[in-house]
Amino acid sequence: MLNLGEKNTLKILRGTGVGMFLGDDEGNDVLLPKKYIPEDAIVGDNIEVFIYRDSEDRIIATTLEPKIKLNEFAFLEVKAVTPVGAFLDWGLEKDLLVPFREQNRKLEVGKSCVVFLYIDEETDRLAASCKINRFFEKENINLKVGEEVDLLVFEETNLGLNAIINNQYKGLIYENEIFQRIKVGSRVKGFVKNIREDNRIDLSLQKQGYANVEPNAERILTKLKANNGFLDINDKSDSNYIMYQLEMSKKTFKKAIGALYKEKIIRIEDDGIYLN
Image (cartoon, rainbow, N blue to C red; front, side, top):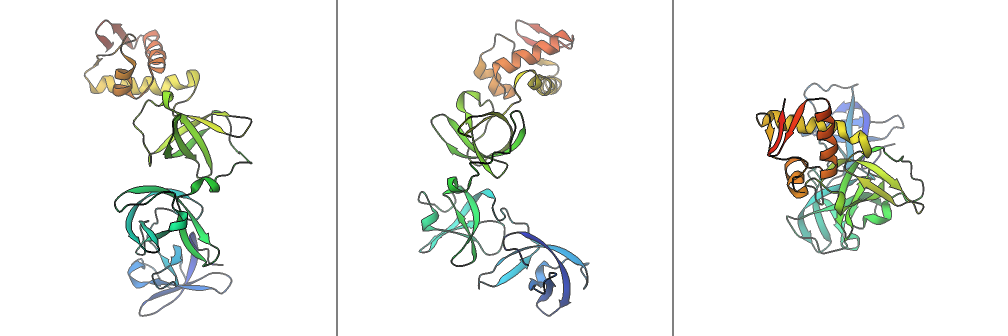
């Protein structure tokens, strides 16, 4: 079976003037156009390709790497707006359609948006949707508190930033816990802070408790070494200045320099911290 919108490993069956035909174990075949054929490819080889529909609605293969695959989310740029919808750059020759019914606001050329890639049941075509909330898993939350996760920030709220967790769940990073420069479209590592009774997920950009000290202590040491062994911040510095310099909260900073001071790696003076 050829899996539309996904990577497929197929066998090279035969070569033609326009490309190579690839096949699966069920007798299905698909054309890999000549311009995408690797130089060392020969008949009988297995090759990994992405399957989609070209501008003439034919199923076709490519070795190009798409920016999004089936049942995934991504932050993509709008290339064009037409009477049928908006088209996004997803790394392939044929741009990706967001039908008007799948837009939650007017899309503009040159701007970007977070979308989900699905197969339209009526047309059997790949399409993208900006109405992503309906695609999240809300019941079976296979996460643990403290677990490190991949995040894609997709929305600003009054409370903070909503993010997509591991291409599957929705979570919230509270505004007063954001100590680094992130925005809609940012991909960052994060941690599960809490899973509430209603299955809503709270996130943190840093490990909780003392587990956060070691990596942040390393960050401070790296910054010190790059700055000739001195930083003009200490435990009395303004929290906003600490966040600007080190992308961490004042509470985390104080824990980290406390650990470094205890190990006699640094000394803390009125004008800042010094490497010993």
